[in-house]
Image (cartoon, rainbow, N blue to C red; front, side):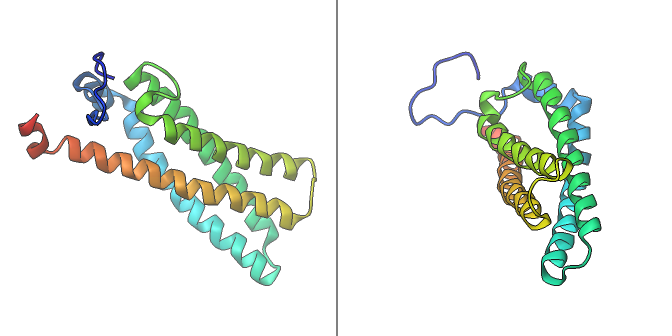
Length: 166
């Protein structure tokens, strides 16, 4: 990331000083900061609605609508995240600092998209459709944890104590 060879065992910073400057200047940083918690709230509501359907057999329409909304939130955060990544790292996806987060995000997108295909194509039972959505939700939780870990790492790197030792 810094243009110098990586020495085995050496910890590379998440952002170079120039990337940190671009991150802080990008309007997409704020967009991501708004969309991420919004998507998480939609996820939680949707999860409750899906579990309610499985538990009671009621509310399939609401569960379905909530998954569709969650999927569109996911698409929005992925598109704007790719723009953010281009602003900060110079490439839309799979920048070295976020390679694994992007890779897992692709699995999340694939599962959510598979749900939409099943829904629109009337493929499978409602229960099998919801099972695909729940698989997407499980991977989404893993992906959200990855991003929260990176956010924590970025904050630790930019702490005054860390900068003083650099």
